[in-house]
Length: 109
Length: 113
Image (tube, rainbow over all chains, first blue to last red; front, side, top):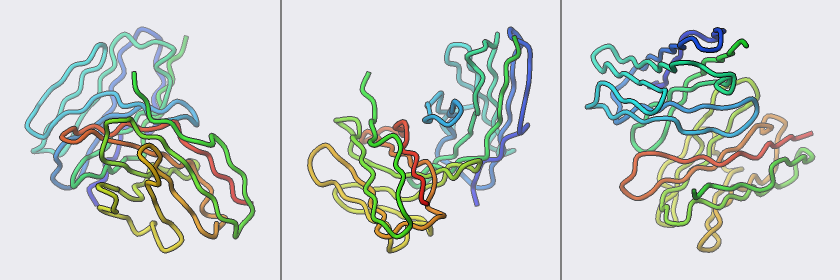
């Protein structure tokens, strides 16, 4: 399976701190994407990084991709209470997305 | 900003009943998808659809499931005879031709009793 697996499963940090989540996958990919899901709600696309890219930024988000290690990381800088959610990495290949189990991020006030 | 919409947001049905979940993809998108997420589990791919036919389907998408694009705007998922284990959040997604990002709707929470 080419599913992504996030690490850690859960993360609690103080507001204002940076949050780092990691993802590993098993097979070759076209791209890797990160999604956010607020409790019981829909999936919000955050950022996509292509297999030939190593790093990408979007606002407070920074994503890295290491295809040799089959891993990615998502960094959220200066966290806010509104960042509390589950974060999923999702690998794209052959036009379908395979999701990992997600990291539950809790920002403490 | 254009969004994928889904109706209903919640549906409760009796085991064995048929349900139809509806989606309106983003208007200029050509690729459509259904995923599901059983409570507490990860999001799973069900089916992809392009040019009025199924492109790919997962093992979950058995004969009880079907998809249709009945008109120029709607994309539906039908479950013919629901089982308890069909209880899940069902997400529709769409993608632009040449694009890489799939945009997801807010989901329909299906509860089979």
